[in-house]
Image (cartoon, rainbow, N blue to C red; front, side, top):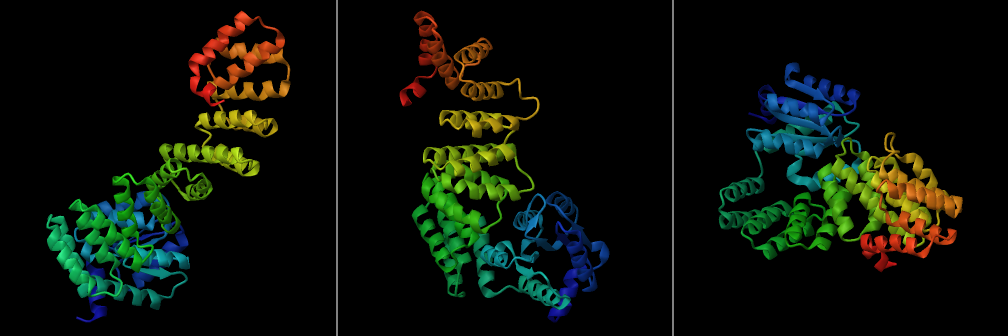
Length: 428
């Protein structure tokens, strides 16, 4: 059976899934695949990850064509989902369709995560040749891939030493055996030989410095060893070259905060804004990272950079009013009253009777008013509402001193501040 006959047989036996946010792009691919011989009822065309998951669950998908970015994730997230549910992943063909030349490099680097890629704009002839070659390569894999697959089966069975021997044979069959080195690393990792695992992941990266699997293997190894600075440098590269999903971006932001790479936060915010779905956990981490980054810039005297970070928080994370309160507090401390005041309007409707808003409003208007009696009166209002905030109480006590409140009354509040906020007083 020649290549074309094999391809036709493949289309007769397998459904096709097309995923692209753009309806016209989907329709063009659908018509092309139909013209190549696939039956119309066996072609499924959708625009989102959620729709694709429904198709995957109820059909025998053998060929997937996906855009790089799709609603609810990325093409790589989709490919992973299909592999997890496919009855025989060795006969599954997954192709990335993209108009971005740089994304083809990502596709190459991902290796097993994508079987081929098609660059837009394309012709029917290009797609036809690509599909025939991809399907044939998957059904009749190279000796290198056959050996890697044998090793993967041994790893799955727990025969790690056997897998390593097979993979060492595979290395001799390929000029850039990053994939084989990744699986040697996996086998060593599962044997708890972490130093050997690290060496193989790193050697794989010497052949392909953005090999996705080697990067993730190295990242997870460093995390297990609690080498957070090394883990961060690896996952930072992953974020640069591969589409982020919410879970991975959350991990990246958390590590950036832990390792004090505050200057990187604006770049992660840019990635965050491209996501179609943003969990509350991720929003909280992005807000925390941007606030800390802004505070860091403010302490360095970079006011404009700080305000840019704070503005991003206000735009995307205002449901967490603690960040608005923290930003206004530090801006008031730095005497940036006119810069702080507009952030009062960023509090969500319904939060104006909450502590975060009342504290923020008090700090701004007490600083603007300059009338100690105003600061005392409004400060006591908050105090009587059981709101205990260090900056507010400090402002109120300072205003009391100016307005002539007796020392014994002042002492009562000062003692309470000392008891409630010893760490803040120690850092002053």
